[in-house]
Amino acid sequence: MAFDPFQELPPSPVPEFEAGGPAPADGGYVFDDERIVLAVNVALATRRPLLVFGPPGSGKSTLAPSVARHLGWVCHTEVITARTEPEDLLWRFDALRRLNDAQIREVAPQLGAYCAQGVLWKAFDPYRVAPGRAGDVTDAPAPQYGRHSGPAPRAVVLVDEIDKADPDLPNSLLVPLDTLRFTGPDGEEVRARPGAEPLVVITSNNERELPAPFVRRCILLSLEAPDRAHLLKVARSHLGAGYAASVAEPVADHLLKIANDSEAVAGPSTAEFLDTLRACHELGVAPGSHTWDLVLEVALSKGRGSARPQG
Image (tube, rainbow, N blue to C red; front, side):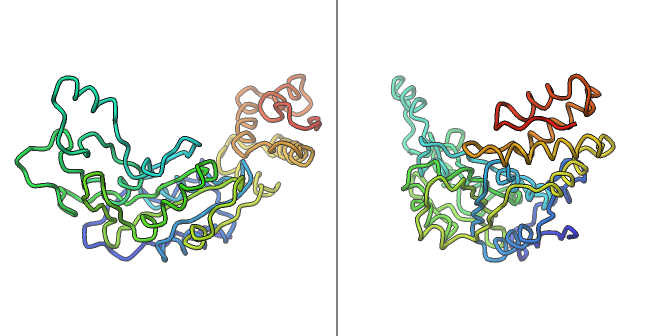
């Protein structure tokens, strides 16, 4: 289908950030599935998070930065691990810095002086700082919502692989994502600017079931592993003049064979497919040459399955 621009939200009371345009034809995300475009537009219209499921290599993590680039917005990313705490998406406390200040007896009176903004804080209102942050004038009034020198850029937030987190983390995000506001470390309110709410994209490999209340507050999108036609379209988009069907087609066929034969592990990703094509292009490797099998083994197969390169 033809690429349809994502719909902008209604104008904000504060001036809009203006930058960038559509993603370039070379290296941009290939939006050839109308479900993806529709899901993003629904998330923008409802101001709900977009929860993206899909196997590894299906493009979950690259969707958010690609949408941000198309809209001309910034993208803030948080990669979730088992050690990620709920507050990390709001702010991070620098305990070491506070300890150092305590040792020299120069501890700031406010906790916010030792907190760095998390991805949601940056996306909601990056100019809304916590009272007492280092560098503030001590006798100046605490910064208030909306009091900043210029418009902040609109933002897309990527919360990557949320199913790797502690089961309590999704539920801890219910209020900030539902109300688009939260309480800062010193009791100050941080909230998204009206009409300039961020798009929050959350990915999951479906390794752990997410809480039902969390899922109900999201717009859901399920991505499938790429098929042959999609792989070739991506290759043409990324490689431009370097695209050669005589190379891309057998590499795509080899990737799909590996994916079908690899039951215990994930098949190669689209990024690995592109790496293989770039290597073949730069090194002048063609199907049937003496280095063809080796390039596909080191760049694409990587010990997966039992498929052998064709060509």
